[in-house]
Amino acid sequence: MDLAADLDLTRAEDGSEFLYARSIVVIASRSAGLVAPSAPFSANIDDLPSFEATTSALRHLGFHGRDCRHPARVAISNAVMAFIAAEVAWASNLLSEAESNRGAFRATDGTMVDEAVLRRARQIAQQSS
Image (cartoon, rainbow, N blue to C red; front, side):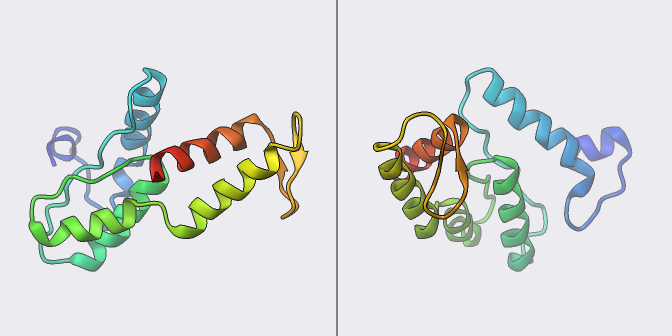
């Protein structure tokens, strides 16, 4: 809210006016070797569906966790920010396939796997355990 006021931004329901600033925060954090930042809180206390949708969008931007100013939001934030079973299974299967392959390879699902993909799979496996 402070940034919106400082920049005289028109607030969008989906928070898209902050896309650039939020992306820079995630990039700067990771570039500095810091853990991914926690997503900012939402001022609309009663709109839980919107909170869930924006939390999901922020997760896709690279945020981990979400600041909650109301207890009703904690369970939603935890559920959205947790790795789902499909992501954990993907990471586990891919890391198993990588044991019998060297360098880049084609996974059984047809996708190209290189070190960046394996790094993501290792992150998911580590953070979900």
